[in-house]
Image 1 (tube, one colour):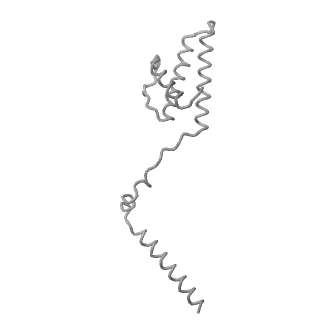
Image 2: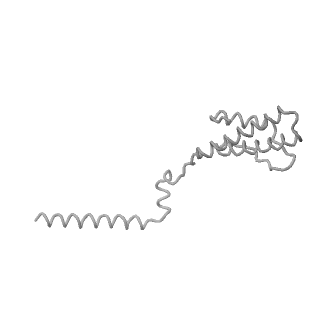
Image 3: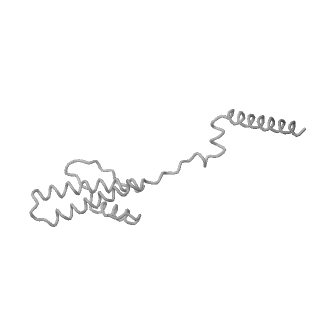
Length: 134
């Protein structure tokens, strides 16, 4: 008698599971999106810590290069080297701001174009306020 009860329970559970799966498969996709929209929203992924660290290291290297060029009066084509390093530094600052979600001025990169000192200062302050150091 007990084996009959076990077979009946197994059959009932299998039928209920099959019914539940078939019922869920028959729903249109719009039904799932309207019932639980909070489950479909994707959270922004946090930036990769290794990419952040690599960017901070590169920023510190460029800042040291700018200080070295400023301190050495015997550098050949000093202004050219300084402007080239400053352009690379500004581009990395914009990339760091994008990585942290800050709004930046997307100025086109072209010869002779520089980001203003006030914009550079704002970007540096914003990144420092978010814990960046270089």
